[in-house]
Structures are given as C-alpha cells and as structure tokens.
Amino acid sequence: MAKNTQSSNGIPFMKRYPSSGLSILVVGGGIAGLSFAVEAYRKGHDVKILERRPDFKDYGTNLFPNPTTSRRDLIAIQASALHSPQNWPGFKEWCEESPISKTGHIYKYDGTFLGNVEFPLSSTRSRFHDMLHSYVEKLGIEVRFSTLVTEYTETDDNAGVVLEDGTTITADIVVAADGIGSKSWRLVSGFKEVPISSGFAMFRATFPLELAMKNPLVAEEFEGTEPKGNLTMGPGAHIIVAKTKEDMVFMLTHKDNGNAEEEWTKQTSIEHALPYVKGWKPYISEVIKSAPGGEAVDFKLMWRNPRETWASPKARVIQIGDAAHTFLPTSASGATMALEDSYSLAACLQLSGKGNAPLAVRVHNLLRAERVACAQRMGFKTRELYHNTNWDVMDKDPTRLTKMVGRWVTNHDPEQYAYDNYGKCANHIVSGAPFKNTNGVPGYTYKPWTVQELLAAAERGESIVDEGDWS
Image 1: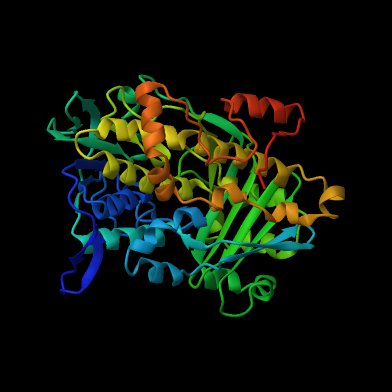
Image 2: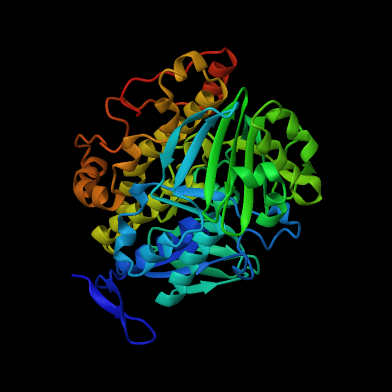
C-alpha cells in the first residue's frame, strides 16, 4: 500500500509504495528520463539521474544564442499519458496553467476552415520539462549533472555505466533515456541504427510575440490575449503557427531539398521557406518574415526503423523514449509514447521486485514495442494525408483531417495495462504460453515494417492502407 511522503515543509506530498529494493540509474534528464524517475520513485524504487548537461536552465534554449534556433517548440500530450500523473499531487494543476491553447484550428491553405482538434495537454517542450524537473527536485531525487556516459555494461547481477573519466557506476537496472545519441546501442543491439531521411524537413522558429504582432495581418489573425494555434495544410507542406502568452512559433514541414540537416544549429534564410506557402493565407508568410534576423532552423526530419528489442541481452539495461524509438512530428505522439514507456516500466519493475527485475524489463519491452511501432506508422500515414490531400474527398468530410491520433492511442492506460497483463506476458516469456497484446490498433495484426518500405510506397504514389480501425 502506498504511503505519504513529506515535502520539505512537512505537507503530505506523494503517496509512495513500499521500497522495492531496486536501485535504478537513469541516463538522461529529458522528458522520458525525468518522468520515469518520478514514477519510479512513487513505485518505491531507489532512482538516480545522470545528466550530461551542466544544468537544466532554459532547457532546449540555452544551447543556442539566436532565438530563432530555440527549441521552445510545441508538444501535445495525449490522454493516455495523463493517467499516472493524477497520482502526482500538484502536477495536474501545473499542467493546466499551460501557455498553449488546447484547441488547434485546422485550415486548408486558402483559409477554408476545416475543423478543430482538441489536446488534453499542449505545452512548450521547455516548460513541460521544467515542470518535470521541478517535481524531481521536490521529491529529492538526485540529479548528477555534467556526467557523460560513454559506455553501458551488464552482468547477470547488475548493470553499469562508464563515465568520461573512466569511473564506473552500477545499479540493478540502468534506464537509457539519453535520446537518439545514446551509447546503449552497442550493448542492446550491437549496431547503431542508421538514420533514414523521411524526405521532409522542417523550418521552425520561436521568437518574441511582439515582433510578429506588429504586422496587421498577423495581429488580425491572432487578436486578443488568449493563446491560439493553427494548422494549415497544402500541397507538399503543412505549417503550425501558434501564439503563446510570450512567443510566436512556426513549424513548417516541407519536402527536403537537400539543404536541411539533422542539427538544431543549422540556420537558413527564411527566403527559402516562403515559396512553400506561396498563395496560402497571407498572414502565414508574414509570420515567417517576422523571424529575427530573417533566419530559421531548417531541420531534416530523419527516421529510424522500428525495433522490437529495447533491452540488453541480460535485460539489465532498457531503452526508453527517443533512445528506443523516434517519431515524425505528424504522429503527435512522440512525447506521449515516451511518457507511456515511463509508467509501464516503473509498474513492471514494481511487480517483479529486485529478484526478477530482468524479467520485468523483458515484459515491459514486449508490452510496448508493437504499440509504439503502430504509432510510428500512424505518423507517416498522417503526413501523407496532410501533404497529398484529395480535396474533392476531404471537402465532403473534413473530419478525417481533424483526427490526428486514433482512439486506440488515447483510450489507453499504460500503467493499468502493465498491471493487467504482467503475469500473462511473463508466463509467455518464461514458458511460451500464448499471449497477444491488446493495446494496439483494433482489428490490425501487427507485421514488422521498415521506413524504406513506406517511403518507396509513397514514392510510387500508393496510399498506405492497413486493416483495422486506426481512427
């Protein structure tokens, strides 16, 4: 049974389960790492975070002096990732203070209104990260900064990491939450997944709101004091333009002309962005022109093939978040899946206890991999829908364009799913008993796929049509 822990001022803060006896090292203090640390703490695990950065000040923005290179971009959190945080006192209230509108307005490139999409939670990446970091601090979870992990190791009894200075730190379980650059691939798969161009790139910039609101067309579109977000789609491109309480944000996804790089410091003239929105509703080009210095980041959208295995051979190291799976922005599910990973893994390790921790890691991996691969596939299909829209069909039923994610994504509780299926899944792993996941697309039988297959089909002009209810 969970018991109250006390905050520094003596007020009951979080109901924490009895100690599991498990020591866990989390490598990486991003959204996946911090959310896992909070939930692992709640489940009674002893958790410590290793972070390569010197601090989290202005997370995502402090690396880049030019404001147009800011990573104060937008993220959407789906309902499936908000069940477990209901047990984090005060966190829900913080989330509800988000500076981003929960309603997205969807338009055709000529300005025709198509409908709205609702998000349970919208935020800037940096603000959501700040909330998680503050929560970690309140719980007293140790974060060791300026600590670069260069190697992952494991034995039958524990896992370890080797630091830049040669020091080794061990724990019962190591969670690799250090993103696409994680060194854990050497241990987990033995090879580094080669990034594959999605064929698209994204111009993105975030800058002070007043710079954009000087333009009368922009001021007319975003009049008032409330946050507002618009998604506009047209031939070969789509753009999100959003006004927060302080900033203007634009994120323009376009066909990759070869100039973009998978690098946040790559800047280019906004003159390269304007042709993609020529003839679109006029305020859009005016927002782009408002970027300070006439520059924006042009970020190549790379993809990696879905992987079935995120755990090391002895299952003492497990990847979560971007270290395990990457997403196209059109999935609207990257952060959601990272959070789901966190809740599922923490629950599985609670159920196993110290003695069966490797089994818990394998169970978590099996419970999650197919669902995540379906969400990745969904993101590709959504992008194709946005960029190759049959307007004769969509004008008759524009609601198809407002369903960014399916009910199979939102109507899910990863923590409860782990509780409900741990025993059956563990029995399958140990004895080969039948087990089938039920957290994917209803009516869809999962089949392994590759990015290359989807890109080739798109190049041939073929629609990606799958059985099952993806809506």
